[in-house]
Image (cartoon, rainbow, N blue to C red; front, side, top):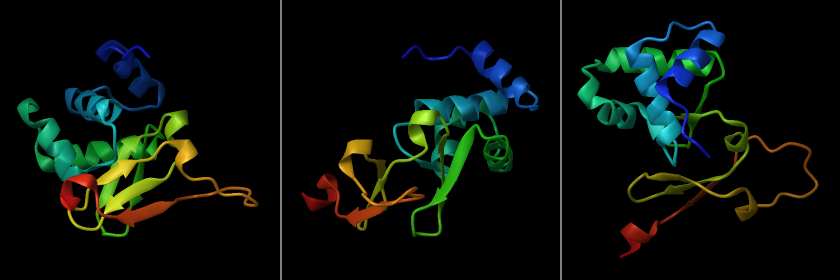
Length: 133
């Protein structure tokens, strides 16, 4: 899949009724490039070079959630994590390491739930490979 350009991201933001500010484009780009849900602190670290303060990053994350471009989840540790809300990302399980707190997305085929019309969230807890070594 081709990465959308910054112009595409700006157009997408405007279509959703948001101003296409540099901070908002940077935050959306970080979410699109991520392979796992990111905490506010993670996003701040990844947009560090942009000169955006933590409050601006948080406001942009919540704005993206409000217009459906991102989703916010709590994986049982009272830390909000954010991920892009592309259609393929809506319904999947997450693995949460009980040692380091890392959250990883699991492929859809990793967890099958039968006899249920709709599954909201699935969180598997355990120790990641890094912590197990």
